[in-house]
Amino acid sequence: MSRELVDNVLSGMKAGFKTILNLEHPIERKNMFFQKSSSKLSATLLALILGASVFLAGSVSAQKYGGTLVVSAYDERMGFDPAAHQFDHMGSVAGHDYLIIPDVRKGPYGDGTYGLNTMSAPYGAWSCGLCESWEVHPTKLVFHLRKGVKFRNKAPVNGREIDAEDVLATWNAAIKISNTEASGNKEKYKWTVLDKYTIQVEWKTPTAEMDKFTGTVATHGIFPRELVEQGINRNDWKNTYGSGPFYPTKFVENSIVEYEKNPDYWGKDPFNPGNSLPYLDKVKYIFIDDAAQKAGLATGKLDATIAARVLSISDVNDLLKSNPNLEEIKGAARAQLMPVNITMKPFSDKRVRRAAMLAINHEEMNQSLYGGSAIFPIMPTYPDTAPYYISLEDMKKERPDIAMQYGYYPEEAKKLLAEAGYPNGFKTNIIVADFGREAAEAAALYLSLVGIDVKIRVVEMAKMYSMTMNKKPDPTYTDMAWSDTGCIFAFPTCAFSIHMDPRGPMPWFAQGNTEFEKSAYGQEFITMLDDINTETNLDEHLRKWKKLAYWSNEELWFLPLMMTTGSQFQQKWVNNYDGLIGWQGMAVHMLKYSWLDVELRKQLSGRGAKE
Image 1 (cartoon, rainbow, N blue to C red):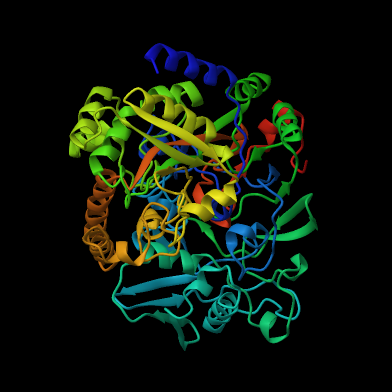
Image 2 (cartoon, helix red, strand yellow):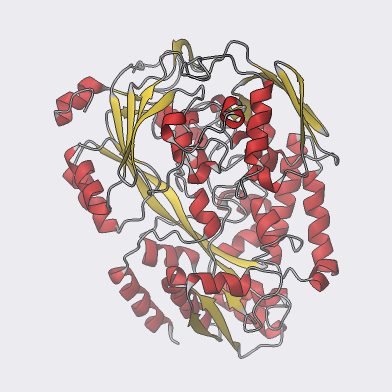
């Protein structure tokens, strides 16, 4: 195919491109929370520009109390059991506190050390929530609880003080629910109450898997043990007894959930220690369709959205033109990746895999399909997973040979193919679901220019995953496939542990059969991953992580293309809400810091404080 024809096809794609957020992947649906990201600004610079004037102590714009924040929620899934999987149960979050929470002082509004936008992070990114202090040991953690923190003053708990037995009861309840982090680790960790205010968790093998374990600890809101002892239904919104900053006061399924502030909440603003939290009087999540959401944003009846929605460029522009008080913040939406079968020719040859990467013009594809809004590089992490993200600029300095793979070098690709024994290219196929079809077609156009003739096979999404992401791939998966990633918002080593580890249950980017696991190739990866997971020094953990990240980009068990982005919106009068980053997106960890300029809202939209 000629270059001129490719240009014409790409132009046609750009003209007709419309994208819809369609989160059907099982892990991604759990983890689809807003990411405050930018391809142009670092997290630290964003902190200075967006946060310094509103969040830091001594700021020009002082925090204000009161008002009702109205937010359009990202989907209708709702649950109120604090022991259940948090990502599917946003209703439980605001009413409870957690043993540990992200340290916002180290996040984008603080010193920028960590992105705080992942499902979890190394233990250096965390601070105490309900604990007053915690001790980190190679095979255990010890938590010393805050004294005087009380549950909701409602029978039968009646506002009693939280103690270590409640933490244990929460863990024991969580391990009985099949889809929780605790359930998956119930054999690995042992919890023991040492005294009324001290509880420890132990494991056998020294490990630094804090990026996974801290997520396990932080996923479940602490609730009173009476709920278990008396058989009280934890999933009934009326039975919220936690110590959190907001309590649900109204719930209509698939319609609305309302919260009111806990007047006895113990928390203080870490940036303004004299300020009690929360700032808001009420929060309303409303579940509406896209048309109603756009109308609410345009008229100022809606304060903000939660989770990045993928809209066409024209829709975003029209919305911003309709309301000059509206602010857009880009967020990660869906990864576009191509796993390849590295156990069979031609992709068993690393030169072929590298040639395929060099043949694809990432930036032109980004501009043609996504209006320049997509993000790359994206694997094993993506922007705002500080300090773990490796930018293209960093790659160019540290590993220019790998950075080259994100450029466009078709002649170099042809040379590699010739060296690998394919001077005239070859025919191949790719298994793809509808969500990746346009991107796959664009990639196929580029590959055709170097002689790789790609036949695209479109299947249903569930079929695509069943064919590729298991230990016994479908026999027709002989060459290439398409995938998103379940690790958009997960812990830093998620892509390694879930996607690449041949020992794992879903080795999307590594053929996870027994022979591959035992091979020198598989063992090399396993050795490096286990070395990361037994490293307790945070600096060494990061260094070893980067080593494996570069190894992964060099070996190319998958061809990473880019991450599409969506848009989150908020009105000018909403403050500290754009800090709703990552899996913390709808969690109380950030919502309790949000505040409204109700006078400005009245002036600009006519809405009162309680509207």
